[in-house]
Length: 123
Picture 1 (tube, helix red, strand yellow):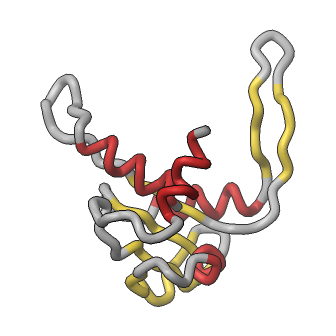
Picture 2 (picture 1 turned 180 degrees about the vertical axis):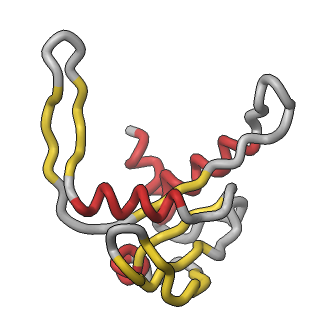
């Protein structure tokens, strides 16, 4: 979640080269099991596979530009974050799921222990 917030902050300073408009990312998160592996011989890539990856992609595809959209599984793992309940959302291939939009301020000051967690992500 901290990385998603950092991405939103960084995107504000970027501009589209052909229009000059600010870049607005759409971020989707889901929590669950994944399988990983290397794919390709000539140009190998590390990839993640599974329903969790597909669901996160669906969260990204159905959120507003400049926001973070998460599944109920992710929201339950981050209870201290401010969330706006979107209610039941139709998710392709999944049916209806309860989803949430992050309702925090990307510029809010770091809480106690939060800065250490963020620094740990980048070291």
